[in-house]
Amino acid sequence: MSGHWRQMPLVLASASPRRVELLQEAGYTFEVLVPSVEEAHDETLSCEALTIENARLKAAAIAAKHPDAIVIGADTLVYINGFPLGKPLDMMEAAAMLRRLSGQTHQVCTGVAIMTEGGILEKTFHVISDVTFKALDDDVILDYHSRIQPLDKAGAYAVQDESAMIIEHVEGSWSNVKGLPMERLNEVLLELGVKSRVPQNVTR
Image (tube, rainbow, N blue to C red):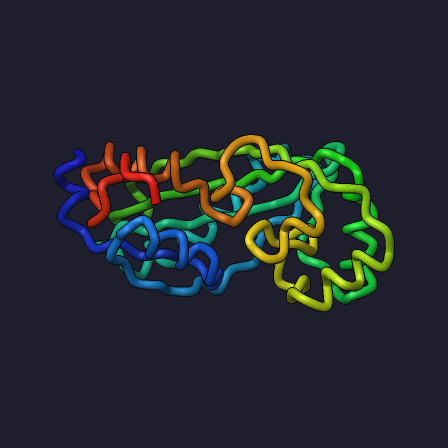
């Protein structure tokens, strides 16, 4: 089966520049196609189930039109005490999200779906990382949000942008918090016979 997957071009079904950057840094050759889908927002689902469902929706939308490609879909959500935090609607909500995360440990869950043959062949997985925030006052929150664009980021922050201002430490996959758990993705793609140009045991 892996030999069959190996012969196909790789497609990332995402508009996220952070996911594009992670795949590029890992040495993969791929195309970016942005799916037009209505994401699920069912708060009764676990973080694993909800992120995988949205990853499947994204991957399936592209795989249906490109059955000769291997399509990667992903969805990342921030959870605090089991409650999901999506992308803030405005700066006021963004500030409220950081106040809620202040001094707390929360979870970042990314679901990934890999599809080919129009979605007939499919692999899914999820990765969860724990992120602990520093205690933040309003001045720090305002300063941080003046340096980044929080409105396109789940939880109103980004681990790669000015993170020392707000993050105490990350336990688990750092790339997962950025939007794509590369350690596990590399393993799954290798299982499918898809190789990057960069040896994955080399520290970057």
